[in-house]
Amino acid sequence: MGKNKLKKFSDMESFPHVFQLSFDDIRAGAEFDMKGEWNNRFFKNNNPIVIELGCGRGEYTVGLAKFFPDKNFIGIDIKGARMWVGAKESHEEEMTNVAFLRTKIEMLSHFFGKDEVSEVWITFPDPQMKKVTKRMMATNFMAQYQTFVRPGGIMHLKTDSNFMFTYSREMIKANGYEELFQTPDLYHSDIVDDILGIKTYYEQQWLARGLDIKYLKFELQPREQFMEPDVEIELDPYRSFGRSKRSELNIGK
Image 1 (cartoon, rainbow, N blue to C red):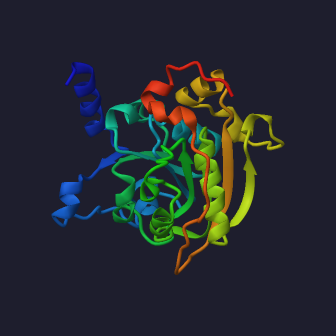
Image 2 (cartoon, one colour):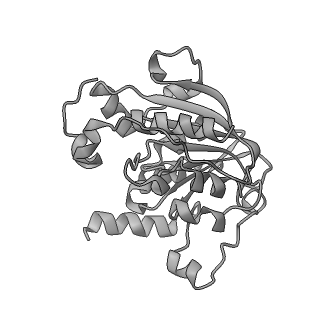
Image 3 (spheres, rainbow, N blue to C red):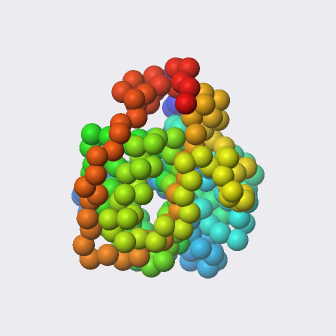
């Protein structure tokens, strides 16, 4: 492991707004002591909590926190060295409404209590075209989200994947969620919102290569049963190259 990466891990351990609890610790019975207590014990206010799943470098988490100082934001990812970018910026700027959590998305119910979260952002997830249960908009994830997202909580999806966008809309329809807004081309839509001013590093790359950014917003209401959509969806052809390689391709629309 390079010195730069080791330095980032060291920084992450020292940042007071970064939290980590390993899978092994959870499996051994360890509990996250702020579960259900994020507002009282960390943010010290009663403002709504918004989480970003798969936050990557944390640019979106930090950007949203700057736009909305009356909300609390938590960026979540498993890759600490990448998340270090946003964690360092928010630490140096002494932002009090930002935190970061290093864990797997599948483990979130160990970190948040019932109705603790008001909004969820899912930004540019891997569409997992061959693995339904790995899709962050799949019904097994919806069942998990509703354990800690308040009834009527807002779900946001930003993606460059037509497959993910179509699948998500079909999932919403199959389970009777209320779709509040959708567009296959965010930056050429009628939406007027502060989110248009936040473009992550990778989002800028994809826009430069001619990929439209899709956006979806819906309301999460509790469900006892879930239905996976039974529909054939055209695959994203460029995905077959893998997410790392595709950024090197000169892809047109």
